[in-house]
Length: 117
Image (cartoon, rainbow, N blue to C red):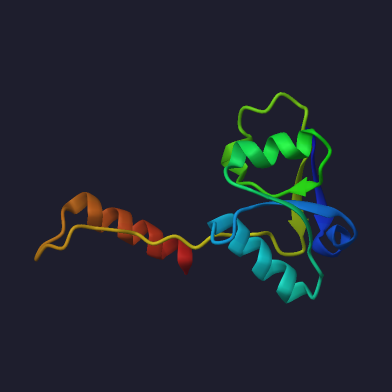
């Protein structure tokens, strides 16, 4: 599995294998294509990350999955990053509602806020 960089516009000519409507990765991909003004050619919608990877292995199109889901791949798939702007996901941090948060929670939030600045 070799990593490379590619511009989103390059995917406009290829069939896409995407997760089902409403999935987090699908929403991120749809927003990125819309922002770039690149039309999406959806060839297949499938539930589950493994389904997307199997369809891509079978040559049905190009897919988008999280980097974490590619950790144990054996080289049958090639990994690319998008340029100039990578696909990112915004997450929420949940902490217990308490009058005085635990010290570890305070330290974690301070670390997160420092990274954001």
